[in-house]
Length: 376
Image (cartoon, rainbow, N blue to C red; front, side, top):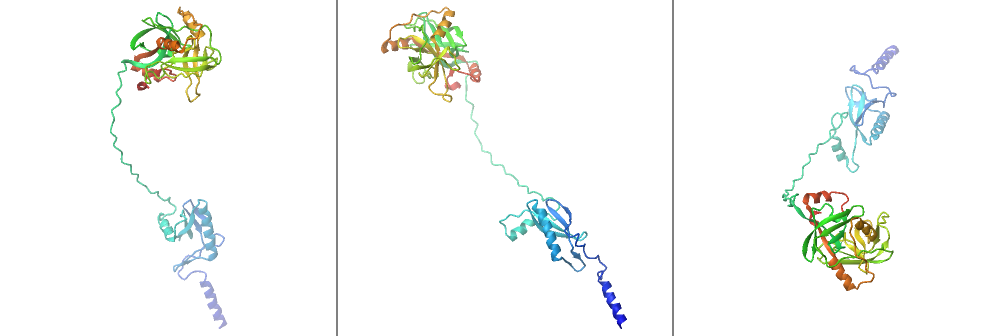
C-alpha cells in the first residue's frame, strides 16, 4: 500500500512540471523581468513574467510594479505618460505607449486621447492636416497715378533769395540756389526778369548773377567781419511766396565766429533762416552786408542755429571776378530807410529746370535746394 501511494505522489509531482496540454512553460525568470526589448519616444516593450496558457494570463504584483516603473521612467524622459497597450505572446513582453495627456482632461477624455494613437505604437502618430482657408481678398479700386509734367518740360522748380550789389544789376546769392538751373529768374516789382550766371564759388556756396536792369537801391558790403554778440538782420523770402510775396526780416545776434565743423569762412547766428532765405543778405543797422544767409541745422540736430558766409569771404570772391562794391555806410540808418533799402535791393529768385533734373537732384543724399512741395 505504501509503495502504491509513493507512485501516485511521484506522478503528481511530475505533472506539475508542464501543463496538461503540452503548451509552453511559464514565463522568464525573475532576473529577466523588466528588461527593455525595444523602445522609442512613442512606445516601450518590456520583458514580463506573465504566464501564458490556453486558459488565460496573470501577473504577479511584484513584476507588475517593476515593469510599470520601467515604463514610466522611460516615457518621462520625453515628458510623456506610460499606458499599457498590448501583450506580445511570442516574446512574453508588454507594450506601453508614451503619450501626452493634458492635465485638465477627465478619464473619459484620456481614453479618447489614447484612441487617437495608431494600433502600432512603434509607428509615429500622423499629424492632423489642417486646411488653411485664405481670407477673401478685398477688391481695391485702382487709382490712376498722379499726372506729372513730361520729364523734358522746364518748370519753376525751387526758390531762394538774392540781393543787388552793383548799379549794373549784379546780384549775390548761394550757389545751391542756382545749381542745375536751366534758367534763373528774379521777381522785381511784380515783373519777372531773367538773369545770367557770372561766377560761382562752390566751396563757399556763393554765386554772382546779373539781371538786365539798373536797380534803384544797392547794398554796400562791410569791410569788417562780424563780432561776437553783434546785432544782425536777415532779409529774404522764407518759404517763398506761400506765406506772402513781401520781403521778410528776422533779427538776432552773432553767436559764434565759426560755422559748422569749425568753418571760419562762416559765422553762426540765432537770427532765423528758413528754406527760401538762402542767398539773402545779413546786414547791420548801417545797411552794410556782413554776411550771406547760407545754411541752417535741422531741428533733429539742434534748434536756433543758423549760419552765414562772412563779408570778407564774399569780397574775396567778388574781387577775383572784378566786381566792385559800394563804399560801406558809416552812419546808422533809420528803420524806415533800412526797410526801404531791404525792400528795393532784395529779390526773390526762382530756379527753372526740367522735371527729369528735379528728380535727379532730389534723389541725391545732400540736397539743399528749396524745391516746391509738388516736386518733393
